[in-house]
Image 1 (cartoon, rainbow, N blue to C red):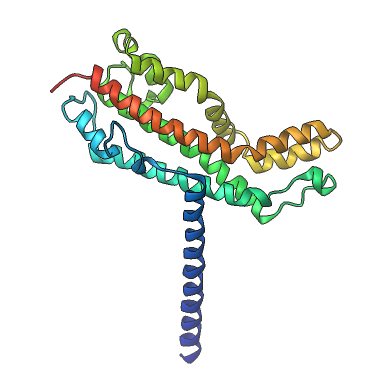
Image 2: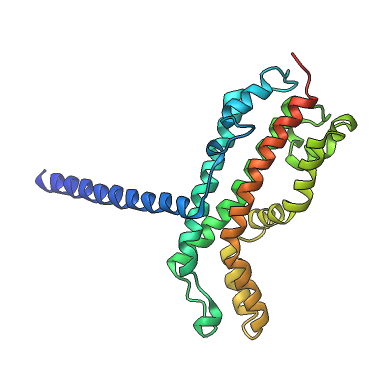
Length: 255
């Protein structure tokens, strides 16, 4: 019994150490938010309103045509946005410590920091997809598309809105954002989910292109570009949120 008690006390101490270290990490991440001026949805104002007020104010008088729960839909977007901010800060913190095969005598002895950097990048590509998928769900709740629920994806919703809706300046700007800024990111997410994750892709590519410095430099440049890419795409999520809600407010059916 005494041995069991000692083991239990030891586990408590280890958990206390873990919590302490985790809170230190969290503090470091929050400091990185400030350094980078990273924001999430709940920290941005739209027409001088808090996003939840903006969301409810613009949508309260619009009649849903498909199942819609205001708090759930907003909260889902808000929580995903929080995660985008968190993981993006982590990629910035890890960036200085990732592997660079060219500087490491054409080797790739992957560090823990490099591994986690690529893991968080995988997660971010998926999170951006999730966010835009929820924007598609939101549009589908209020605007006619003739789509079945199983076919509701952001790009399909945009393509299948009726002609009158597509005449809106908000639609045109939202569609332009999609066409010009999102395809590469969403295509990369598809490759990660269905074909190969970033770590294996980069690791194998390093050995395949062992004698091709130009290709190795290009791969490294792409790898190092992820944090700035994610930071920019966070800004696009705010624009998409505002445009989608204003489009619904303009073209949705009044109660």
